[in-house]
Image 1 (cartoon, rainbow, N blue to C red):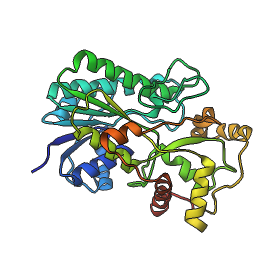
Image 2 (image 1 turned 180 degrees about the horizontal axis):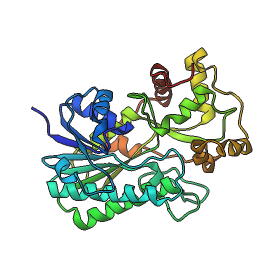
Image 3 (image 1 turned 180 degrees about the vertical axis):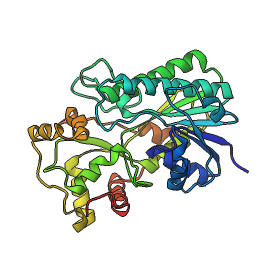
Length: 337
């Protein structure tokens, strides 16, 4: 007998995949949503879950939500657009992120769901702050009107703000929690992997002539999934917010880990520093690089002390995450030979 029924939106996504696998291992009855059921068999195969019920749901449409939610005890709302380049119109990201969150909440409330756990992001916390920047915690919010932000950052901020406003007005009787991860790395489940892993892939491929002055707090996808599930099952979680992040690392630090731990398999990983001006030139030809140029030289440190104290969350070492990510990319043939 299962512990209960959990709906995971965006079941084909990186974080969602690990949440589904862990929920199934823990004895929950799980169902998922994807945009196109033509991908259903591929999604089930990547998750090793041939009997996983999947429902066609789109963030921009009301269709399918009621059916997907019926009989659910909990919802893990993970689905949100993740771009591989800056969009021409920022509303292409902001609108589905915000409207999808509100559709998920409304459908969950209508179905009598006990609690919704939503994946937000450090993007909703750590941007638009004056120098010197603080060590960010759950009390901080991104200022989406600040030039320090861009479309993806604003989409995550507006979506979480809108969800919390909706809950305050309409969500009585249903609990709501957000998880705010930093840069999510770790192993992959197949060839369709998250853009967040591009940093490790590009280093292994030798796609950059040097190491840019870019940095980020690292967190493992398996630990992010674990935190989502802890936030779903712990008592008295309504209106909580949890940062999922480890230490801040420059790309040079990541490169050092790869060189030391992977030996010859990291032979293409650069060792020299890459001047800012050269990265800006590379950004003209690579839309993924173009997205990160605004982050050159910026340090955004955060603390996950709240998740550790309240939920007993203990993430694995960042170096282990980086090595496991690289090993998995290589094993799946996603790195140049």
